[in-house]
Each structure stands twice: as C-alpha cells, then as structure tokens.
Image (cartoon, rainbow, N blue to C red; front, side, top):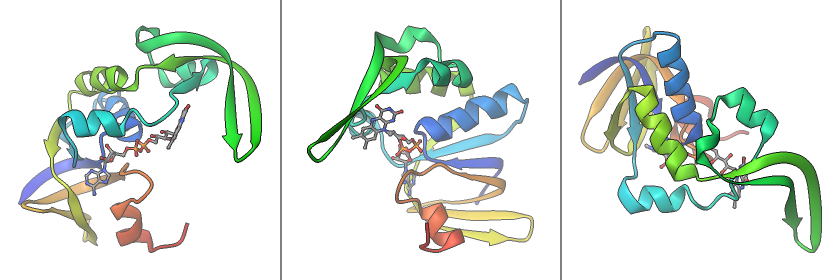
Length: 157
Ligand SMILES: Cc1cc2nc3c(=O)[nH]c(=O)nc-3n(C[C@H](O)[C@H](O)[C@H](O)COP(=O)(O)OP(=O)(O)OC[C@H]3O[C@@H](n4cnc5c(N)ncnc54)[C@H](O)[C@@H]3O)c2cc1C
C-alpha cells in the first residue's frame, strides 16, 4: 500500500492543471496515476483540434511557447452544419504543453490503470492492476469514461 496526500487519476490537461496548481499552493506529496505512456499517450492526446481561446490561455497560465499558430475563429462541424465561433486564440501543441506542465508540477507521475476507487474513513483507496494507494484527497481527472465518477457517483451524468 502506498500512502500519499493527494492522488490525481489521469495526466491529461485536467490532471496536470490540478497538479501544477497544487504545487503553486505549496501542497506536497502529490501522486499522479496515468495508464498510458509513450506513443500511445501522445496519440491519445493528439485527437483534439487544440484550438484554445486567448481568454482561456490567459486564465490557465499556459505559456504561448506551446502555440503553433494564431487563429481568430474556430469552426465546429455538426453533421452538415458548420458553426463558426469568432474568438482570438491559438492552436496548441498539446503534447509539448503536457510535457511542460508535467515538469512544472513536480508531481510523482506513476504508470498504472485504475480499476477501482472506494471511500474510506478520512480518505480513499485506489486500486490499479498491481498496486494499492491510500490518499486523503482524490482528484478524478480520468476523462470521459471516468472510473472515479462511476465508482463514487454512479452512472448518472
Ligand atoms: C475530436 C475532438 C476535438 C477537440 N477539440 C478541442 C479543441 O479544439 N479545443 C479544446 O479546448 N478542446 C477540444 N476537445 C476537448 C478536449 O480534448 C477535452 O476537453 C480534454 O481532453 C479533456 O481533458 P481531461 O484532462 O479532462 O481528459 P483527457 O484528455 O481525456 O485525459 C484523461 C487522462 O486520464 C487517463 N486515464 C483515463 N482512465 C484512466 C484510468 N482508469 N487509470 C489511469 N489513467 C486513466 C487517460 O489515459 C488520459 O491521459 C476536443 C475533443 C475531441 C474528442
């Protein structure tokens, strides 16, 4: 059993944003569990269009060094309909951004696929295929099919 203060499940934008913010706040003993590595991780995180508005870039503290090109609108296609959203921003290299956030966070990032999460007195127990973690605080940042959501909040939205 590995003990830690904060356990973050998922090292995508949400998980790493949380890790960076916790470091800025001086919170220690943060562990991030991520199921993917190498090219699989990079491929997964390249499916998005990566258009981020200037407002969001400013709010999130994302540096412009990860911007590939500037944009002044984005088009969202739903079936035959194109919706143009006029907003200044940038196309981001998400993998470069994730790498930068990962090193900025200083968190201990470990490989593992979370199978189950349960609440206990004063914290949570998290199980991966070969390890158990016990933490006081849990951040579920494991994407659209979140194990954290299913195990702690059920199958509703
Ligand atoms: C086609 C497409 C285009 C998009 N275009 C844009 C865009 O232009 N601009 C924009 O802002 N957003 C866009 N998005 C949305 C954006 O990609 C998501 O909002 C963002 O990825 C959500 O980040 P996240 O960290 O919450 O989840 P994710 O990016 O899904 O990260 C979750 C992480 O958790 C890990 N994980 C999951 N389950 C487990 C587990 N059981 N154990 C351990 N680790 C686990 C995953 O491997 C992953 O690394 C787009 C999305 C899609 C699908």
